[in-house]
Image (cartoon, rainbow, N blue to C red; front, side):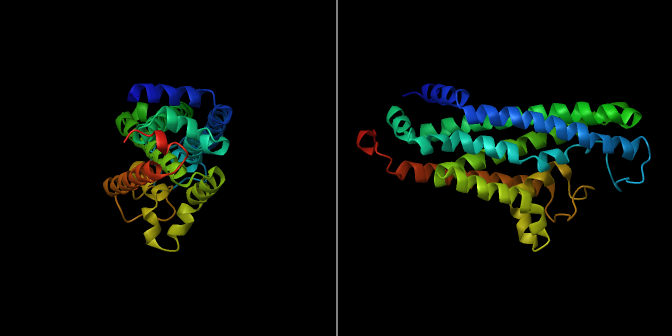
Length: 264
């Protein structure tokens, strides 16, 4: 089977998955609510001179912390894409339809990356519209600093894509939807507090990723990291490569009732 056929099949499965549709719709609603509510503090900080002024706050970085705070959304979508077939036993049919198991894993990863990128792009649009429109003369468009803001948004989208790929690979390896979601949700929320225990935790993907677009001295980083944006990108890439290798190796060797028909 050609890879394009495997990809088309995975796309059809994802499109007809009720939980994925519901997750995407709910994520979009919550992202919008977050941006609308949080952007009011940005106006108070820059326009109204509020007492809650955030030292070192940068208009080009305003709203980018949303990619770190809402990283749960691409994680959930990515896990659903990979783990939905295991709960109902459909993975056996998929493996029979796509004898080259590596193609099946890669097709799921393409769908995951597409879904994560879609959510990321939507988040970027919401951030730009809701935050920058309230900053008036302090906005990046008024100050001519839009380029740096766009780069930050692009890195935020890339973070979500890598996080989606890692989550999909974890779901392929461990199969249990509940266990994988529980661990990844805990990591996404407990990442920053863990940095207070030891600097080694800054190498977690959910800690290294935000450093790419928020920087080392961001006003939103309660515990400044010691690795720079380039190093953080390398860490995230290493996590993604390791997860991809593990998923391909484990899935290729897994007995799911179709090995007798697998073309070696």
